[in-house]
Image (cartoon, rainbow, N blue to C red; front, side):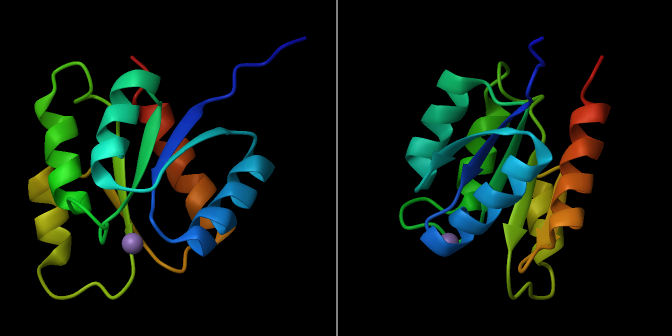
Length: 128
Ligand code: MN
């Protein structure tokens, strides 16, 4: 019997963070597609049509804010939930994420339960 595995795109330039989330998502039974910078992340969102996107904010080219805006400006991608994932959140950052179109936010380091529960919540809520 085959089972549908939801697809998660993680846009992250830090290999350690990527490795950690890769492990957690494997345990959670998700398919992971990976991008290491903002522009390739936006391109991958377009090509892969993931069910949810995890977005690092500090990226080497365009930042996660700009990448989120590009995704949300594309009517074919706008409905995909984007969850910002970042450390050292400063005053006003959450508002900035929301204004850019992020649907949720997780502080690094994220626990496995937090990550899996948040993804499940957004994937559930995105079902029409
Ligand atoms: Mn980063």
